[in-house]
Image (cartoon, rainbow, N blue to C red):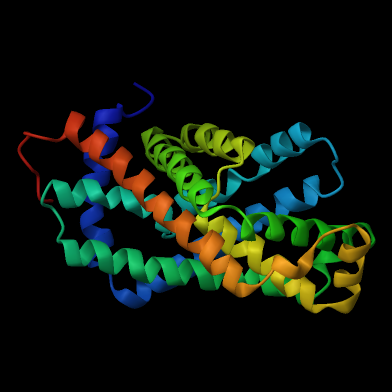
Length: 276
């Protein structure tokens, strides 16, 4: 066949989780920074493509077309993405990795992803990238950041679950391909679906919300946002952490663990574990 079966993909990922759990901390950190940057690049491209589109449906479709290339770049560079690494649950359930190794990976990768995404947000905010359309890109960034920073906790949590079910499926589907086209196509569809649905992704939000927060520092950008009717009073780091980062991260973890448990139970439970 021109692709690996889903059972083979699950087995391969569970085996590969050994390397993820035992990789040197500094290597993990660098790969995580890279993944955060790649997700941010894709988010920036989607933002530029949609910032003047007033039709909500068309805006979502355009975002769905561009954002999935972030995962494609991660797959081919071997970068470490927090949300996808929740799939290491399969390696833990199959007794291939320890809980400490699993959690160590997630913690290192989470903070590395943040640094990578924040770096692209800072460069975009302070070095002219937001000047598109006379600053309308900056206004769009602040509007997005406000929406994410005012989302009810339960909404962020529950939608975060749905998001990472799709993201983790995308990671697995991307591993099913045996060539470049197959791997890109496999990961593309689930990511496109979650973006069009508007589900929050904690790593993407590490770009989107800081971008708006940093844009607000500029009096010119802030003035344009006020003229456009954007209420910036709720756009604070505190609201970002409490209303976006915490609930979405928790939801993403639950979603990733849920799809991992299901895949493990169906394809690996009761089978003899291959350690290497």
